[in-house]
Image (cartoon, rainbow, N blue to C red):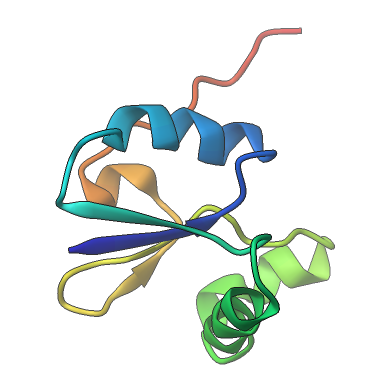
Amino acid sequence: MIKIYGMPTCPDCAYLENQIAGNDNYEFIDIGTHVKLLKEFLSIRDNNPIFDELKKEGKAGIPCFILKDKTVTLVAEEAGLKSRPIEEE
């Protein structure tokens, strides 16, 4: 199962939630529902260098994907999903 750490109030996360609805291959973990889940995510974020640039920019680093082989990625396509299209200004 692929875990996705995020929050429904994040547009990128909400876009993914719609894609995985009813799909048992994915688990969406809403880090805003309980401090335990937030700490779980922060432990991943604080100990993985893929978050270093995001943290410098003041970004949270969600959505975050934990693949079946325990690889951590921030790329939806690596988890078999589609990223939210970038809106034109």
